[in-house]
Amino acid sequence: MILKKRFKLLIFFVFCSMSLMAQNTTDDKNAFYEVQNKLQNSKSGFLNFRLNYSTDNFEFFWDAELNFIRNSENKLYFYLKTYEDIFVNEFVYFNDTLLVLAEDKDKKASFKEATQKPFERNIRREFIYLLNNVDLNFINLETVNIYDTVWISNDAAKVGEIMLMSQKVDMHTKEFKQIVAKLEDYSLLFYKIDRLMYTDTNVFLKNTKEYLIDSAEYYENINVAINNLIEEKYTELNKIIDDN
Image (cartoon, rainbow, N blue to C red; front, side, top):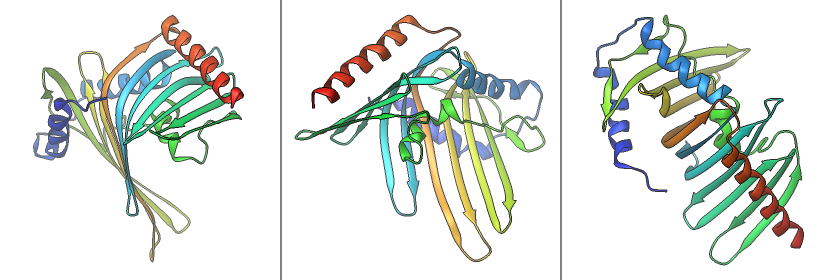
């Protein structure tokens, strides 16, 4: 997947957004409501995106293709393909089973796991974060800064920023979030979270993650082609794993 030129412009607009005139009107927040609704309530869809994840100790950059469905119990099943340098990884979660196939030029590794929570306690949970756990927190107009419409290539978009702070016992948490929502169809273009967890004497956690959406589609019902793709990839990877 190639990161398109529009995302260079997108990042420019996001980081320059503080220079724009804030517009705190009721209508402006509708874009963020709709973005969250698409991510959390669509029955199927796909997202092609770049995920940048960094801490003080490491940085990861992935391109990802994510196809998903939600069954009658609203459980998320998916086929995920990621690219990192020479590594190409495939993941299928279906029938409460996670299948993994990882390969580079010379090696191939695979495994199977029965689980109700794929990627639990694993950094790969960030690939499904937007569909599983996202809480954009752009609803409260007392705390969110909503800026004038910007243009990214030919797409009109709304930029929002919010700072959240909380404390539990001696642990403080500070989060700064940025979102860019496309106004034509209320789809997500960009989402960034800076998170800092600290006590009065130590920094416990500091990380940043950015999602740059290259393309996406969301459906109110289960898309037959996406459902078939997930089932086919499940059968394909399951056979490879069993044969090994």
